[in-house]
Every structure is written in C-alpha cells, then in structure tokens.
Image (cartoon, rainbow, N blue to C red):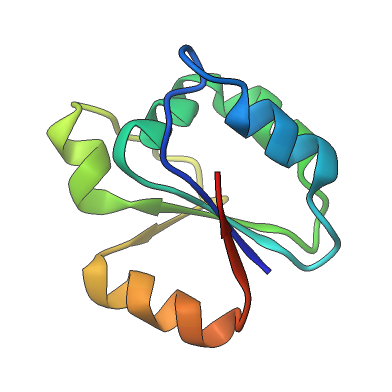
Length: 94
C-alpha cells in the first residue's frame, strides 16, 4: 500500500498515525504540506522498517524550500507519483 501524507505534521497527526500503522513493504509518499515531514526526517526514518520506502514529491518540497541529501529519500516528480500508484495498487491518503 502507498500511504500519501499531504498535511503538515505540525498541524495534524496524520504522519505519526501513519507511521504507527504502516505495514511491511508499504511505501510512504510526502506531498503538499506533508513534505514538511522532512524536517522530522530522523524520526520518520526510525519508524520505517527496511522494507518500507520513503518518497517525496520534488516539486512540493522545492516550493517549500525543503531538501535532503539523505540517500533513503526517494525523490519523485509527477510522473513518478503516477508510477507509484501503479507499483502500489492500493493507496491511502492521510
């Protein structure tokens, strides 16, 4: 399953709730204000297992002045977002 976080972790608990319930081999995609989750990257990565992947929509992060050089962050563009919905047949928006 692809979990899509679109709300800031500083406004709503969606990211922490997602991390508490994410399953093995699930993906996590940060979009819109959810990209502010990059500011809590260490705790986000600590909550994910080795089989989980973290994706960030490049355009949304860039628009908010966010960046990360961590190699565990997989940057995707809009076409990559579409490809993720194919790779993960089920998705859940938080």
